[in-house]
Length: 429
Image (cartoon, rainbow, N blue to C red; front, side):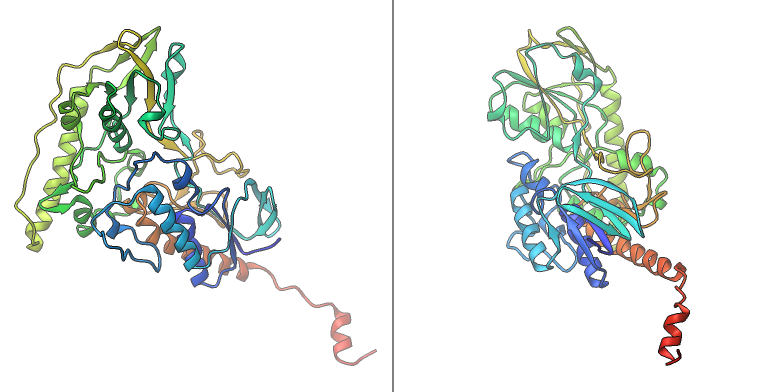
């Protein structure tokens, strides 16, 4: 089978690219291993809501028009939303089709699936950044009888073994799960490493109103001092609730959740933690206040109609434990909320670094002309880390892909017609 472009993945990024390619009349297909929004349907915990408010959940040609613009969609609601979007834009999705290999082929690339092969001039990888849970090496040393879970297979507290839970990681996922599990009646210990503290609201507005209005979200990847670090930062400590409350270490400690430092190693039954928790939290507070200073400066400069400036209590770090005996503490489960990574076992092109991550420049894959990636953190701008980033990123990638096709077309030499055909057209023997 032949098409101009193959898009791999029918999540929000893949569908946005499909819409942009259709706008440019570029023939393409979208390959999806499950149904549209497969990851949102099958790989998220039950209570998950988006970190961004509904009014910011925009895609090409689609603005949120629901009754709760300041609410936060559940994962299931987003999956339904994306399914309807796919139908509205008539995306050429081939669902329940598994990509087995992407390799160089005639005229560009060959995408091998369990339902046939596609020859194409361009490939857009939109399979997402959360294919595999990152689990630290210490997990291999957990004693027998202690269950290992990750944010990918966790659904609700009811699915956990009886007993206490050690949640490792304090990004948005970690703090949300620690609170939810604690409220189910289980004792919870939270291991805190590097994190991004951020208030849910500031001066009367959602924090994303501020980062959108001040163009923080639109800072380009090639304008950042350290884009590699920016792409690896954990998600901010936020939760989407009807009362728009904040969630941070102070809040969790006030809920009687035990706070410890970053997990180091496990020896026998004993988990050992870093002693740098105070410094880690102080750094997170410093960075939050720098952001708030920047927002205040913008508000003063633009005379924005917002509440007066405010500051938040520094993170209070009680004297934390450096060691916890898992058995004696009654901890039966360790839940790793230590981030995710993409996984490309089917990508048979020399485009991965030593960590098996795609090497790219703003979504243009290095060393593979006509190959692109979307949906990764800070892909082309800070906004790329959220669903709203797909609107602008997809426009950029479609433009670059179109330019590549035009260049390839101009560089292809014209085939000379055989002399015999010319003489026949002239009516000569």
